[in-house]
Image (cartoon, rainbow, N blue to C red; front, side, top):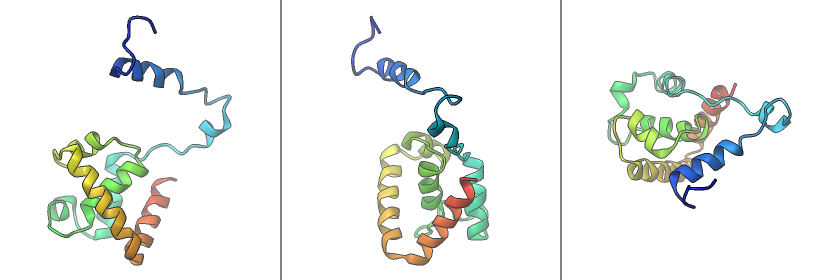
Length: 125
């Protein structure tokens, strides 16, 4: 990795590329479920909400958008910036704060926690 500065994005990218492993030879990589796409996540949340994304995505106090972000982070393995773009151009800091608040809400709202767990299970198939 000569010519690439430590800590640079190019260094990190090259390091990750070399650390991916071989699916044929590593059982842990074979058993890993594929990440869910954003379209699959939104569709699952729409079914759970009984409404379309357009109807609930920007509604104050609605859990739908934050659930999609949560599932996008966990089931879709998307980065904060990617989630923000997909959810309508949100800044990554807004996404981070929404995820933190949603995580807290899942801690005390057991019915929502069960619903999200069910959605996450469906998306991991």
